Length: 375
Image (tube, rainbow, N blue to C red):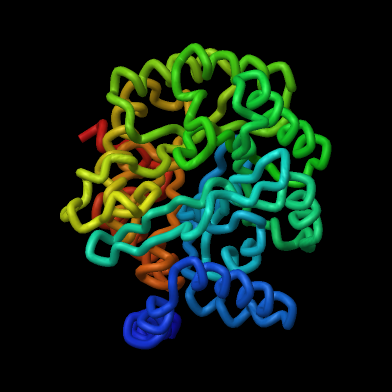
């Protein structure tokens, strides 16, 4: 029955909801989505979203002492102020990365923040870390009932405040550390992500060179955090440059890697000339698909189980997710597919993953992780 409902809802999203949604400017559509989510939670109607879920014990994993019901999650960027965890869990996601959030309230960049590129299956993103600040976001997280977090893990992505006041390395490092200290004190989430690669902020990405990343991670080590730390890495580095960052991460208390962030190179579009230079921002979705999968493959090949890898970029189908898993990602996170395909895509991907496990003779998703290296 659920399979039929998902099929019907896909058609409904494609022919009714999506055309209506895409008539709105994406900035407004995003704001309305958050309002609708809050409304559903307030009247306690999120249970109706269970029809889209698909779960199998074969998709469960224990990573870093945390149980994940399935490997598909929401990546940072969609839920900046942690409004969506109840919705994310109900539609069948196994985890969420919320934020990125910063030590101080941040208005972000001047609007518009988003531009859809339907023919490219991509969204141009230029938000600039708009968020309510770490203190209010911790309050928001703690306002949810404890049962929400059963079998659903939340990671908080932390970035430096988009401001001239964090322009120097020392100021930026203190900004990161201030957020992490508050998270540690609150003891509200099981995972932290340190976003060193947001490309749409004041001062750019200072911590994507080895020496400066060393300085940041050394400061974070001194905090003696009790939760696993992931770092979110850029996608625009050569493998030599990327591996230099990995060597730094390997020396520190870094448990995992999120690979990776938005794509800067517009030449990765099928029709780059159709995107005006007047439109600011960087690319999500399909342009990141091949880039991130290749980085995951090479990272796993070099480091194997040293890092837990979360693969992000261009995941629209079970085959897309499975390719990243076989390359070496234990978890896969997405945002753009939720906009282009609809929320039922989560269940479709999880169901499709089980079929792919059957095809390849794997009993569990854990067996598939990194299997491309054994072919």
